[in-house]
Amino acid sequence: MYKKILKMKLVGSEYVEQYNALMRYDFQVTEQELSSVGWQEKEIIRAKFPTMEKADVIGWFDNDTLISQVAVYPMKVRIFDKTYKMGGLTGVGTYPEYSNLGLMHKLLEQALKNMQKRGQYICYLYPYSIPYYRRKGWEIISNKLTYQIGDYQLPKNKQVPGDVRRVSTDSEELKKTYEIYAMQTHGAILRDELAWNEYWLWDTDDIMAAIYYNENNEPNGYLIYWIENEIFHIKDMIFNNEDARTGLWNFISAHFSMVEEVIGDIYTDEPLAFLLEDASIKETITPYFMGRIVDFEKFIENYPFKQSTMDREWKFTLTDPIMTCNQSTFLLKIEKDGSAKATRINEKCQDTVSIQTMTTMLMGYKRPSYLSKIGRITTDKNIISMLENSIKQKTPYISDYF
Image 1 (tube, rainbow, N blue to C red):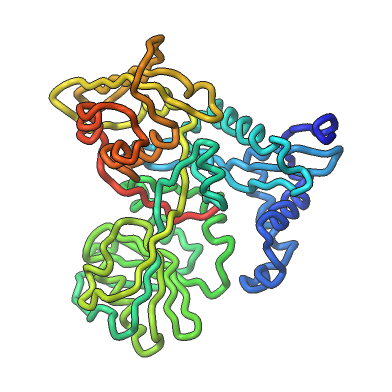
Image 2 (tube, rainbow, N blue to C red):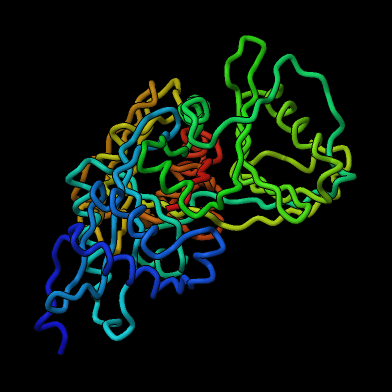
């Protein structure tokens, strides 16, 4: 009965309180959880207001009541040293009494079409349900590794030419340090004011930051952390070279007398345990972000494959549960210099791959040979060998949250 009176439209800033109420209901954010990070309801609304102003927010309304919504942040990411416009999907939710009406599927379809028009050919999201988003065309593209290190396992001090200095979390030096790192790091979000606001949104007031400067006073890495109940918590640590990594761990180890253990997160494939003298630490790997190619043809136009002595090609049928532009048979031609073009062809083709699999493969999260082994790509060994030799190997780094 609802379908006759519901209407999809843009969610303007006048609906910010309804937007926030729907998010809190769906994700069950309690007053206790808000107070634990120093937030009050009105502060959340004020914080989200400027973000909503910049975002593309669409929703279903029952008369003037917002009952289902999605938001897309305009962002940029680095993919194998190329900059892409990216749509950051967030704020996804529907009140339970309006579920099973297909509302969210239509919202996601419209959101993806809007991304396509804006040239956002890749989409990131933090999933609250991996199976749900897989059914809609997203796939896992990054991990988070959480580790625990006892105070007795901390690395001993090792001399480096630079030094570490504590800075304000809103300092321009901190932003500059991240920008240098992100520009050379595969998968990283290039943070503007909106992205930085989301990065800090749920942190407590006692969050701190420290930067490693090299001998030329240039920032080469940073550490975001807080200390609570004799535990040194690391939100994130980035570094451009081994000196920066060592210098930042020197800084952490200097807290030996203050803490009993270090608990932190890593968003790359850094072999932390191997690098420690006492490698018997606890590490837990969990999937983190999911991604989705929005428009395959356009995504490929800017995608850098490896260079080769010969041209390469692959004919295959691509499937997509939402975007019709990706539901076709393609001829992928890769030039010697690594540039490529995907062209639609009217041919029957035995080779098949889904948009989910294509995304995780081209993002470097899973290799072609593994995806073929588990039945996610249907093709012959020659094509898999070609793809292995054509797609660069680098683990995506995504430490953001939105």
